[in-house]
Amino acid sequence: MNKSFKAAIAAAVAVGSLACAQGARADLTVSGAVGLPLNPTAQIPNEGGVRLQANYYDHGNPGGGDVKGYGLYGAARVSDNIEINGGIDKLSVGGGGPLDRTGGAIGAKYLITRESDPAGVRFAVGAGYDHALVKNAHVYAVATKSLGALTAGRVPITGSLGLRYDRFDFGGPGGDSKKLSVYAGGEVPVTKTGDFQIVGEIQSKNLDFAGAKIPYSIGGRYRPQGQPFGLSLGWARQGITADSGFFVQVGYTFNTK
Image (cartoon, rainbow, N blue to C red; front, side, top):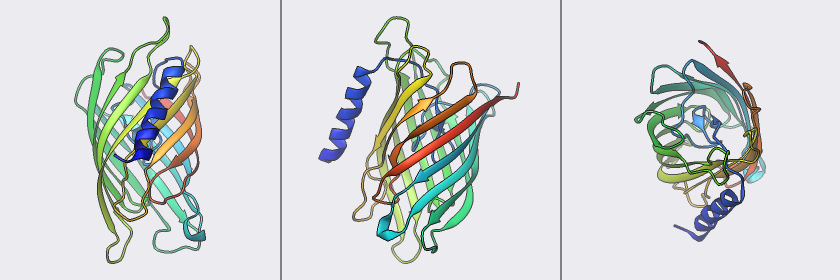
């Protein structure tokens, strides 16, 4: 584990210890699964719930060309322990080229343990494919747990720890990347009602190319208690470029029951 990865983990722990604890209200990832901005968690929509979300990610300016991601996604609970997610998205590359494409994203998550928040640990496994995001195929296993209330009357901070395997296809000879990575993240509510949260994550490198850097995200989430609307803003590096940039997520949860 390199020094920057250790430092990022330490910083995330420090932020969590200083914030007021609250419950998690997960959004959808960069590819549509319920989770953190970049990586899935062992959370799935409530029974009868369907989450729709629009994403925008600025992946930076590698080589002088802006790389941006746009997408519209949905995630639904289709049984006691299965989530289906997917959507349509676009990777926009300045100057065009083979990586500039629009495509579909699809995924599924299986919750191995029944939801027992706040006391228990939830385990989930899943897989997904995002054609626009450099033909990314991935599988993962993740655990999510409420870490305990720091103040009476407040719900706990939520932490997640996961292992994932990614394949990216950049095209051409030597253009495939296959990499195993580990990630950790947390959702730390700031207000007693949980309307505002700090959300962050850190991941070991997900590309096996020289010059690859660790993915991470840090941001704020606004989700009024008992309301379906949510907004998240922050800064992230997904990993397909060595640059970081701004992201925004706007979502709405429907109850189909």
